[in-house]
Length: 400
Image 1 (tube, rainbow, N blue to C red):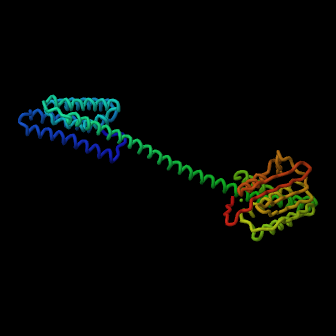
Image 2: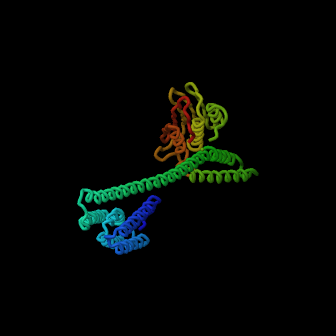
Image 3: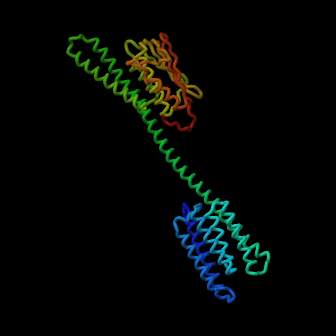
């Protein structure tokens, strides 16, 4: 007679029901023994039979709610109770635990019908035993049936609500675990992107410059010079390592800023990039303000990447970096007079594929709430401009 999902509360209720029914049977048998007019032996035997039938069903694993076995067991138990009711009017009170059994084990519609029949039999026992007909003879069984119906249906409603809450809590716990996993994955991806940008803006750019310098040195040396072979092997090693660095960038998809001001770092960058065939100038517009480290990282790396593209692809004779401070924003402009490129195709790298630089620059600007714009056309040079909003006083800026 166990429920599919027993709980401590349901177990306690079942024990109380067992004790109530058995106690009422003992009471009926005891009153029959004390009443000389009643057939005491028959009442005691019938009470013992009903107790045995009840115990058999309570212990049988096949007697479960909404099963055929439960219906047959209740029918047999009801038949024994009717026989006991014919023998003793005190068996009337056994109807109360029977209400609970019928409502618990039968479907709702059949349970209500069984309770109605049981209440009618209890009321009819007053007439059968010639007792005085009074309002209590009708109100007692009907009130007991109403209490049983309200109790069982109320408990079922509370149980269903508890089950829904339990399922909701399990779903929330599962969702929280999934969210934590998604946040870890997002953090991993963000770190991979940062490392990719750092590799591109530092290691890859440096190896590219080394390769260009070695190629120039190789061309300037006579073919039979003793150092020519060493220069060629060094260039090939730099080229291989550059290919490895780019493979890391593509597989991952960056922030240590040099000590000192951003303007000083940009000026040093222009001085390092200036060569006999390329003049790079730096200018500051407006009143400089102290910037958070993420801003300086983003602007410096953007300038490095844009100048690297100028050196490798633009064949420019002049380039200029301008850092402009405005009331609510600042901008960095990198302009060259090189060959330019088709914006739809993007700047090609040495292998003829689209480079990683522009997506990295755009990602940096977007992570700080800014924008990146590129203006270029074949034969008309290139202008790269990144605009960032100036953070408010006390506002925390997180690095991408």
